[in-house]
Length: 286
Image (cartoon, rainbow, N blue to C red):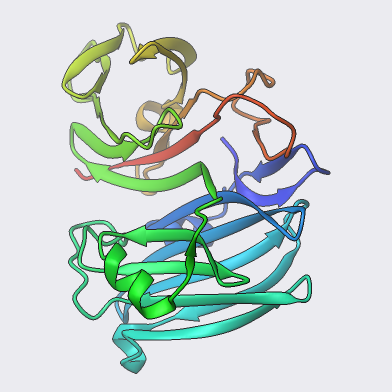
């Protein structure tokens, strides 16, 4: 499976394989969210990266052009430098881009991404383009920005941990509804089975998983077709001293090449149905 790093022209964000051990160690406590927006008539990407390590939490907000070239970014390390609340002006396309944040009351679980009690927002030319968190009133009061919210959530990459179950949340449509996604698999039994549940309903079951360690199926979530691709080869045939991770991808975007080795996330500004791609790296805690 590939990872978010670069873009191939105007058609998509290309992903590359984080196969080195250093990349794996760094990325294990990482959540990357990618949003597509329009700034001064140009298609851009806003990447919000949440990380957690022994030193504390960190969030990075970065603006890219349509080919994923970085235009500007801000790295917020509130638990290191007590910058739990603040703002910063970014420069791109000769317009005013401001990032505001308030993480002073943020609540966290096992993920680097906060559960609530925060806001992080991006204001372009005094319009609220992106707003994350549950403190929406506080964000508008602080920024005095007009309502725009033109950013579209197009992709998320997350590392999840567990023994038999791996859980996350995802959006599969443009209505903003969040779904609970759970992957279940007990690799200790002689004939393991892979189960995918969405909102408590079993929508996919793969038997004889040891022989079907790679594949794809289509499930339906609220009348939306979602393609599920999986690669769990490392769960069964990885090096014992360096256990690998299973890789899963959920997508409802327009048809692209059906392979785990070449994947694109559409970023074209041309009209198209809502597309969202979720990448999950599932690490087993033995």
